[in-house]
Picture 1 (cartoon, each protein chain N blue to C red):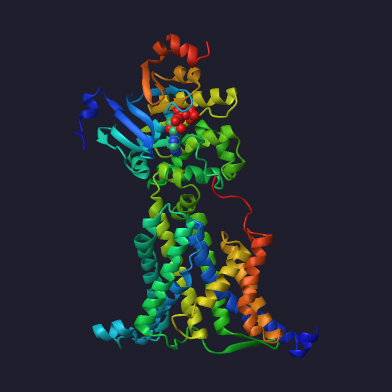
Picture 2: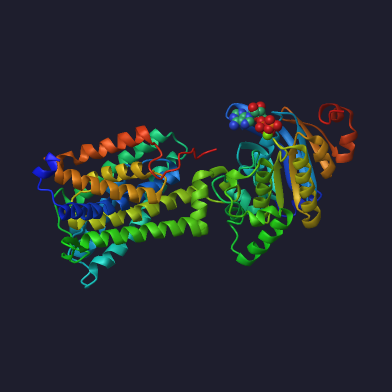
Length: 320
Length: 247
Ligand SMILES: Nc1ncnc2c1ncn2[C@@H]1O[C@H](COP(=O)(O)OP(=O)(O)OP(=O)(O)O)[C@@H](O)[C@H]1O
Ligand SMILES: [Mg+2]
């Protein structure tokens, strides 16, 4: 209580923190959904997920601002950009589709040779991918902050003394759309069903003609596309630089673990909780800004100890 | 690729294995077996534990490293990928049924129709399959893990039928099931063969039942075929009676 009072606690202040925490949480949620897609496909935590999202964001940034970095200078197409009123959203769409293709390419080139390898090998491959992508972005665009603005109006609506800014609301809405789209895809489409079956029952799936290896590539493609959304949405908030997604990735991991890394709904619920908790920690604990990262790690450890399947994960074994 | 008429030259065999060897790394499981499944008939493959029955089916589906020749409808499919072999029209119900346990009954059946695009025909095949297994109709939204062993076996056969295969490979459909259920399942296999002329290669330790529904049979012993003949010949054969019929 003393801490709270010291920080100047008010009830609307608390609600305000919850709202902006949920907005941040929605960003973690999209990246967590990307992690869940790959985890469900191959049981591997993709440490390169954040960097892939960062790279996707640079694609969108380049299309909007015409800054293609070193490559653009060499080839002489810097300055070319989408000069349309809806440039941001067109670039967004192109970047998401391009990321889908790049995700498939990454799986075919880097992951496929390791099909059937021990999980540790695959994890190390994703760590390698992490530094490759980070290095490529840094080499091309440099390790300087770029501004990349703005998908949503930079203003807020007021309701009962709490201000909801459009960025938070927009990000939450996009996250919900992705979650629903994923649920529909996996539950109601033949391809989604086959992707689930291919990861859970690879042998039976192949015996009915499923090309399981391509299902994995498709999983990487979808994951890269979903991750791209999180990068592009967060960039206007945190500025664009090659390391921008690293803390987001940590929070997304915490979210996925908390909600259940197999469960898309769980990942989103986990991410919103983490976003809100981090906002509260940052506000109400003196020096709390610096405690956010250790706090996220603490959540990962505690969940893994007490409830490894997460809040919404089903605590049963997958492979029979 | 074999000439397309080789199937007819070899007496209309739909599936033909010639001098097939198979090994799991250094462990050799098949030492040159030859067998044929004529179009439209049920062939039984008998043998004790570890004889190589499962390995024979796996050699057909490309799930084990194989030397020699496996031909389906005159096409060489030796060491084909399982998904490609399946797409050619071979439905393999693996030992242990390969139930997609977390999917529903209907989703399991849908997976059988995965490579097909003919929606209307898939619907009709669902009706056809549930004609053989009526319980699946009202329980199509039940998660497969909650089915009994016998029901899972039936579901695996139903899933295979949804593929509209030209050859059905069944690996020990009697495994772990009560005698009454086993008899039911064999009756259905015989009915399907009779009504649809679906060629079937069935692996069994339960020689009694297998010989009743099969036209021909082969007996495997440690990776070699030691006996073959018509089902009636084999069921009269002294060593088969002793070893596999328990008479
Ligand atoms: N994955 C594997 N790795 C190594 N050896 C194997 C493997 N699978 C089978 N074998 C060996 O190959 C031989 C044939 O096995 P197979 O499974 O084909 O026998 P089976 O006739 O189907 O027996 P059962 O009636 O017990 O199912 C056995 O000696 C077995 O130990
Ligand atoms: Mg076997």
